[in-house]
Image (cartoon, rainbow, N blue to C red):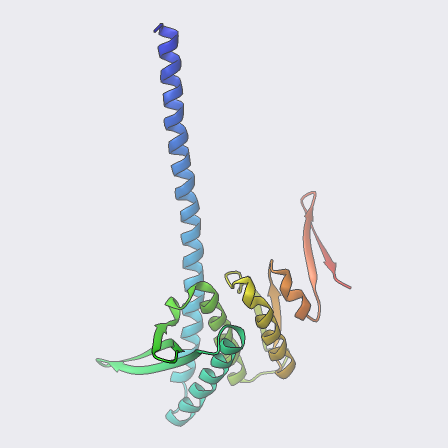
Amino acid sequence: MTDLDTLTSRTQRRRRELDGLAGEARAVLTRGKEIQAEISDLTDYISDYERVTVLLNSLGEEKQLKAQTVIEDLVTRGLQTIFDSTLSFHIIQSVRGKTANVDFIVRTTLPESVIETSVMDARGGGLAATIGFLLRLVVMLLRGGTKEENILILDETFAHVSAEYLAPLGEFVREIVDKTNVQIVMVTHQPEFADYADKVYRFTTLDGKTQVQEDA
């Protein structure tokens, strides 16, 4: 083998090594972005649960029980309407040591068994995100307020909800808006929700400029 052949072989081998390292770097970067998104989602979920905990702790014992029942009933109704009639939502309050603790549980009632799962572990992000939305909604309703004050902004809240559940979810959100004084502004890439909206604005980018068009 000539010196040129040896050099060519080394160059090709080194190029394959560099390509492999570049692929690993891209995989790490992608996973890093995924982890950041997961952390952001978890932070939102925790914030939703903290709102409920603060609300319950601010009430007297009798009002607290009534508020808890309202929360459980509304979230359960949402879960059963959107996902599955076997699901129900429960707030479990307990004292560990001298510290009050609140757990949020999804219960699946089957013919031969009952399965309880922490909301954070329940069927992935779609279910957890929907519960988070329902909790924000019911806390807003319990606190009262005018229509101008009761505005929920949902920024890709349902991005992880499976396509099969988008229609019943859209119908449920539509029903909530019609029956309460809550306004919902939804930012989404899921066109299925457009069928349930009062107004739809589509954002596109052309030559670096954002254009907004209202659907007729």
